[in-house]
Length: 518
Ligand code: BGC
Image 1 (cartoon, helix red, strand yellow):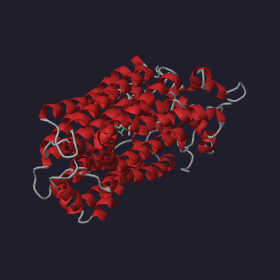
Image 2 (cartoon, rainbow, N blue to C red):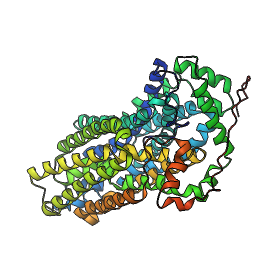
Image 3 (cartoon, rainbow, N blue to C red):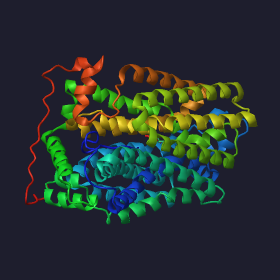
Image 4 (tube, rainbow, N blue to C red):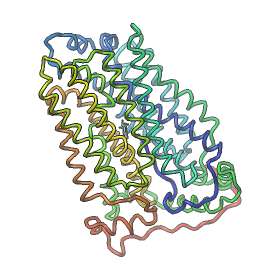
């Protein structure tokens, strides 16, 4: 998962002094290993679940079905436990991200990242040494706890540490790192698939590498000024801000951090706040965007691409290589988003991206319906065309719904409901990812080629929703979100009347003494 809560207003404060210092770059690079860890785990499971030795050891029934000459192509991999191997991670991540949002607030971003790397390390060790299925699943649950902690703390850390004018770009960079993690996983799977007996162990154990980097690195990085202020350590927060900006003139930015923190501290129960009438429009838009992001079907490709390619009749190696190709397209296309997101506008990119995905899904569904029967393989040329179409589909996703899902859900909320709203977004995303991971192989077996039209129907729905209901948020600052976006929208304006919005005011007072940690 990418994106994050932008702790202060990113829209109106482009002119704070301070540059992209070495400190910021080192801290961001270290934290970025959190994105890589997540991406690695997204990308690794599909390749591993296609490896014969792995299947023989943990899923012998799937192994027999895969090699059975008369087995239905679409049902070779349909197995609840195999799906659970992939999906369990997301179940654990939902719970962990809830605990991590509290931990982030109470203890800071740095310890939460340390916890993430420890969970990742334990998960990777359990997976590398797994002798039975229960150990494998337990390892995935630990990895999920790491994902939950990392995905709450890392984006928050990166956006808080970055100078305001670089926040939008760095937000999308986190998504880029996830895609690089997925690509590395695809490559590792490709290389280890020929190592007899323990290739899959190397693949799963690879998750430990970014975890070790993050663990060691998290002792080097600074805590963010926003987190220090939030926990009553204003003096240290100011000192840290001067250090990371490389200038002494940081008063304006610091006051903005104090203001943002005071507003969010005045909200005792952010979730109750989300139930109030004026919160309904951002809650609906910020949450549904994640349901839609997952129902583009992207994780079918990210998790199960090698399995899908084997379903079409590709050999193991060709399938893993094809996954490397789609992974490369994913990373490269995400770079486009970094440059276009603040120019083209969110709505245009979402509609155009979904249209590209729609065309690709319909074409893939049509080709498989025509050429892939229950028992015969797809002819070579057509199979290559399908790989090309999957690349087109991934490309359409990577510069639209991928990064924008996260960006939009972090910017539609006014400051006072932003952290609660973002938590809702992360939870929804994880839950829908779990649903897709847990049900896709069974759905493929039942619906066969029609599964692609199922996702196409979702894509049509999301194009209509964006066109009719989603307001444009490009270039709008947090303070103006309600007045300029929601109150002006043809439909959502009915949720507001002039007395509705009494936004909390914060007094800016710098204290000489740090308060004790709360
Ligand atoms: C999604 C992930 C997905 C990734 C693919 C992210 O935006 O949230 O579920 O695996 O993009 O690049």
